Image 1 (cartoon, rainbow, N blue to C red):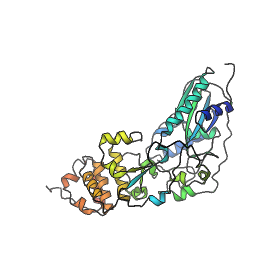
Image 2 (spheres, rainbow, N blue to C red):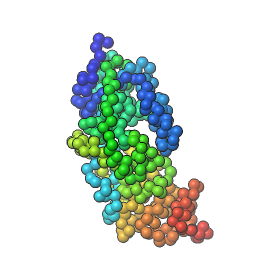
Image 3 (cartoon, one colour):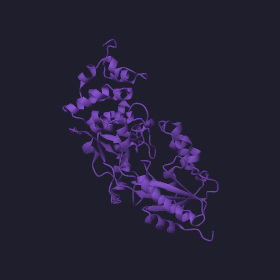
Image 4 (tube, rainbow, N blue to C red):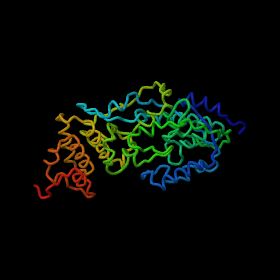
Length: 384
């Protein structure tokens, strides 16, 4: 290799490919991040998440991506933040209730990020390098490596906060065997004494600076297996997938709203009655790009039923029809959340009017019975 590209060249290549900033760091282990991951895992704050928690050593050692790796080129691409005030929509009772979708999944942001990373990898490969793209991958703690590359600091809300673009960014890396001049100058903490994300988190998931309690995080709970925790169902409001609150509330993001003008390819809201009336195949076709536990559409219906219970109109006959169908579902997860939604909307007759055989059939984990018990409803298991 006669020459090695410098950081400024890589920034120019990245910008031409739609990336917003590029940094470089070495492949030394990120020990501070490893310690933080291990401590949170030991404390149970990961709530069963795997990803980087599955193997903290691997996730914080870029040199393990491949033998001979020497540098990590880290890139950011901005995406559009939400433009409405969640507080204005959280308790509405529309005729056709809508579920809010987090900003980062409203368009193919990771596809666009990958295109930019591929341009960087191709440029590096022209120098005879070996390069490997790593994005949204449990092999690398992306926020930690981006912070070490000088692209921002890790804020109170645990997000990477870029001084110019805020946290509305996707992060990806190109690991290479080229020795590129690395930038190790970490930015100073810019959060200071600000507590907006902590104080206004709807479930108190961010009480400690830089520590997320995933057991309380709505974004994670919407993706987690099992029932949606009863204690956080009301707090979920109209969020169907993801939660943008800790970013929307961050003052660093106040000046970071002028992002790419590319049209969004997906709607920011989903009609929950339409979702609940859809077949399994239709649900996976329309929402299969989301993370859905075990790829089971029942989890989409679970989330939608909580949103319906929070935002549905008690006077809408279509709500009654949808709830009746869900109360008769073959899936206990759907039936249990349909009980909650019906009772939340004060439609007791829909639940108490069901035969026990319809509600309590195939309930191996007892989740339907547990939901009925929470509402003080006793079913006659001998009803026919």
